[in-house]
Length: 103
Image (cartoon, rainbow, N blue to C red; front, side, top):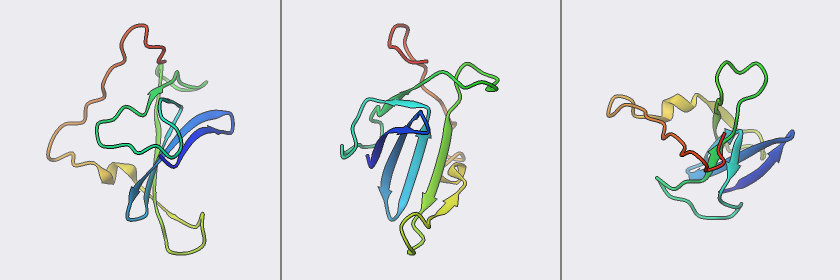
């Protein structure tokens, strides 16, 4: 976990996956801290309610970028859907439980 905090007043998580790949998730209330090790399947946070103009109760803003080898912050943004193996299995989002404080 390379970042868990607020950006522009919104809660954001950033995970470094290795090989220069970093993904970001917003608005997500972190259950981990910057510097924590996380693995596939770990809960890292809870999706919060959507913003004004969001047509659903909650919407995830998900981004991905790959280090370009240049100066820090000069990474290449990629389509995060390209990271999913949609041909192998369907995409399913785990629902939250009543009373867990999410959304």
